[in-house]
Length: 265
Image 1: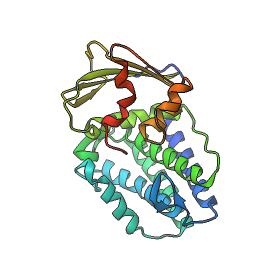
Image 2: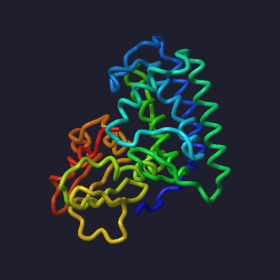
Image 3: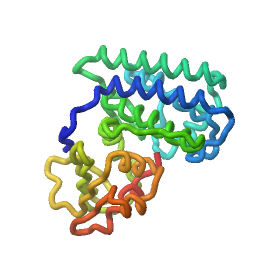
């Protein structure tokens, strides 16, 4: 279970701030058709368009409508169709849509107060609408990282944003686990922010179970490293060599393969 070792960043503040940073970066690209390495079939405009469509969809889902793939395996095709049918390919218009829809989403979540609804999400999972803001924040942060790398621009990631993203991801991780007979338990420490437990039983994942049992693998990760590993933007070797990722326990050899037990986001 996550413990708050470092004061939490307000979620709405993080999401609104990153929406602004992301759009500014996408608009700064000199070539709107430049390829983005982490999403090789998409240009800067495609990535901006994909992300710009998300806040309105999150809001529709929170209000009991909207669309989302019923199977995780269908998400790539869903995203591709979303980009193909963008309402506009003008970057300034897309940036305006993203910011306005993010503001509307945050206002809707605020109206729910301490009774946020459950909404459908990846793989027909039911998730809390307020915690789902974490996965949207992940979209802003990680796709911003993708564009910045392609442009050769800096993209500092705020470590305090990582636990917010993790809170969102943990709602959907069970549905993203690949079919397998894997049985093992992992304790992940996000340095400065607390710990999480992942327990696989015959391939079925439970996050932070009340009784995790004996831990097989312990992992200690620098927060930004953990985020980029989770999203497949870096591999495990360099973090291990630089001390940003440490693994120990009864079965330490399982540690580097944890990310590979999930479908790619």
